[in-house]
Image (cartoon, rainbow, N blue to C red; front, side):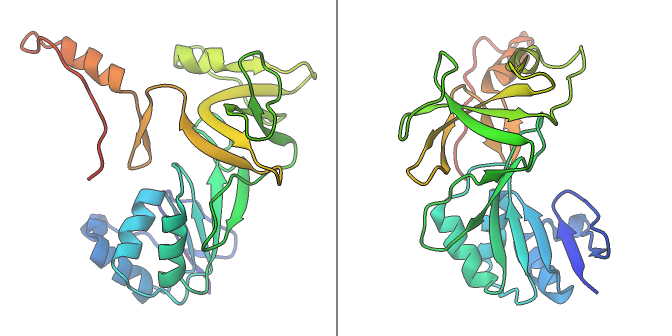
Length: 231
């Protein structure tokens, strides 16, 4: 029977879900647990995938690894391919406000990871400041255009509410993701980072300015600057 491990628990029809407890937060224990349980499908943030790959525990039973939640690098793909030699690696793209896998693309060792083809009924567009489609190689904002975008709750983040707008086509919505990208010659999209101060910490979205505002409420703090750093 197929066994499935997810960083976020999502049951697949006909599979068995393997759920690790907190004692497996240690990357080495986690890697050996994946091998012992013969897990075959994993949905991971790139950060967790890097920790697993660094243990150099070969996972022969893994057949599919979906990476999502942050930027995937060529080094990530190469390392994962070595520890999961039988796995198909895919790059999933989406945001909290859109389907989290609005697009997927198979990853190949030795090549630069790109964003893939959008799901039916959706598009990942690269648009300039005027809302026009960018040319090949021209940086622009990544916008998800889809019939499957649900409306946001009235108490949602004001920035999210402003980012969701109707498309000229009835029944279609657009969401400005805050990501930057550009079209490549093969029509794929290359992710170029963010156009705001948002950073990802272990796959979680963090606004440094929000942290600064929270610290400013403490009378003992006169000033603060929040930055993200590796390690």
